[in-house]
Length: 159
Length: 463
Image (cartoon, rainbow over all chains, first blue to last red):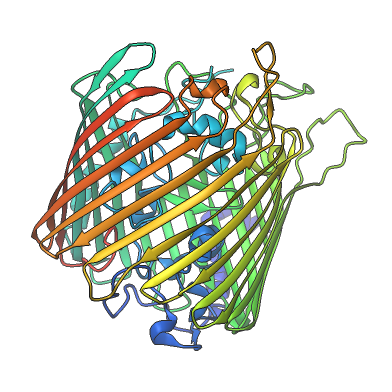
């Protein structure tokens, strides 16, 4: 025991090595997702099942239909990201997410993407005026991004 | 309470820029961004007029296959300056590194490692974190993910301060049965209780400890059932021994069923205890929509025309708040996205009703929030050029609603014309006109230059 105490660096290297060895031995041997989608996708919201039918996406172990960009998938995309962010990354860079989830960005998503009315972005049409109505009608969705301790945007005016 | 001192945004951007030469040995480098020059005036109903001229620059760089390996670097940030009146509570100029991280993607097991500033999706909303994250698929269908670091906050000079969040960490272990489903357990700890207020009811304490579980069942490719539940394990008042340590923070269940190839029915039931799920709000008392109350929502959606050029979506949503009654939103949207024809269009109409709001000391005892929302959009994409129109209107039932300043109608119309000079360079301009209860007239003009250069233009903002 004394010998290990005298050589803490060696102990650390051994522990890290053991951890890496154990970690690697329990890793799946399946190939990772492709870094990018091999085929160019058509216009509009992609439906994976147009090409992939009912087969299972390796790695995710889910049918491709799980990732069809249906209206309900788009509204509930947070849970898909939580489980399978790597699948999203095949087509989307993080900058795509940052269009709406930019944190400190000073420009509303609807203005940034004013040339993309086909995209479902929040805060269209004079939202500064409408937010006091929306916040009373259905406050549940505000707090995903605003009003928590993650930002002071609200408290800048509501002191 | 002393606040953590943070480096100014400009310092972070400069430090990140200094790392960019590391991208030189990358096999695939892509730079992209958007330059926005805006001009808009706002005529308040109290006759004050403002003229805003903000210039905004977004820049992103992705350097993939560093040294022909799985390592990559990703940066995205923005800067803005006002040439007219101040347009943001943050000041007349500002900037931020939205994300910047070094990443390793292994060829097997979807194993991944990130170091730097990145987005983490842990338990409640999206968080930007300065720290590390890792994930990997394990043998036997298991998958594991972890992130930890310091949460990125949007701090403003002069805004009331809450206790700073010192760290956030989350982990999830799940088991996936191929095709059939997934079962996961997760834990999120967001911050620690401030040490300089021992034994006090901590109104500023936004820390939380969420222990959660999630389930996904898909007995057939056309049917999916999901469920998620999280309990807050943080003890609210350390001096109260009788207090339950575990409280329901969230439960969320959904289903989606493709009844036919082109028809999908979906539904969702959500219950959230705001204080436990979000760790509370930093809004002052008068503006708090929430604190300890429970919030429930039920929603349903019927989509006709999945994978079709013509798609109709009927939707219903009911929100229930313990203190303020119910609200409903019901309506539909028609989307026409032809594969060959160049004109895309959409039309939506929704009716929103809500319980009356008591008005203390006003001329009427209650006021109504009920209103109608309509939206029409068109997008003509001719390849070299495109033209879009977007119009949204709100019409309120109750003119006595004090939030409306006697103006029960709102409107905004946006027209945009774009020209694609090359595959990586697009110039566009927007003009918008609107009026609403806050602004008697709002006119905006915007010039937008989008660029994307490099040898890896297959993803990113393009989709």
